[in-house]
Image (cartoon, rainbow, N blue to C red):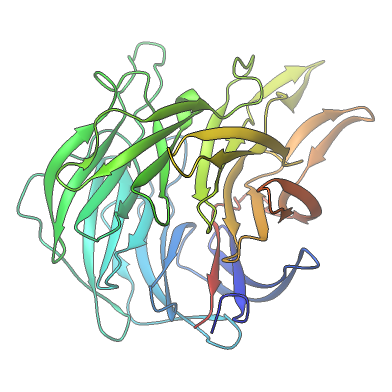
Length: 392
């Protein structure tokens, strides 16, 4: 069954709750159908290659150094008719807050990244989709500083760990960022190399994605609001020097703190999308409001001969802190999610702008047209992760 015929479900988390939505691509609409609750707040999720299971990592830790004491990986079954989720097997206890998780191409291993302390784990996945034992790593792995994403590269022989580093703060120097490359053999990781300009200072990568047919890797650089393009290398994971470096912002010299976010390459490989985020607060006339900045989706056209991306649009999200977004597999619809509500100054006065799901139509030229928005009541929680899964 082609992706255009099969049913695709949109999933979105608020705190520990994960909701499944039907999508209407032509109508640019979402309809909430069911929910499932995880032990603690959802951090990330990833489908099994069979699309019969969804693996969700959760924690009561969080941003701003909140450590927490409960960290879990859960397997959920995906109903093949509706996309509804159900708990499957016993949850695996994790050592600290998981920031990202993914499943390798063979569907036999769950890869998890942790930001504080920066580290990784690999768990075996049983034939029935439940989570098995952790794989003991022989080497002391170089996990850098503040890991943020872990993915197996095409070919499934190498794994890449994105380590963001940290900005300098009062009394504390900047922590360098890097992309760590490991060889990958039956769940065992071995150090291959560390890729970063110079010493990694001034380089704060967040997420990466692969071109579907070319040996190109696209990386969102959170702390510098850049897009880097690398060539894959079978020996070291990545070539050391980037092929291209581009700005993600419409105004590349912002007056407020900005951060690049999630990144996804269009299924046809002709475009790549990166979110820009700004949600710092300030005080105006004694009242707290968000500082105006860029909260949008940057759209780049990719030269199919060279891999060079060209910025063609910054599509306004009309929401704040666009941490996460997803695209349906035919590449005709994109949903970007703001994680929280914020007080904002408008012409009518100061008002609360809620977290939102912004639904875009994707044109043949890759550009986005905002069609619909849904306000989301997150309360004191966050809309932290969203994704789409096409049912088997």
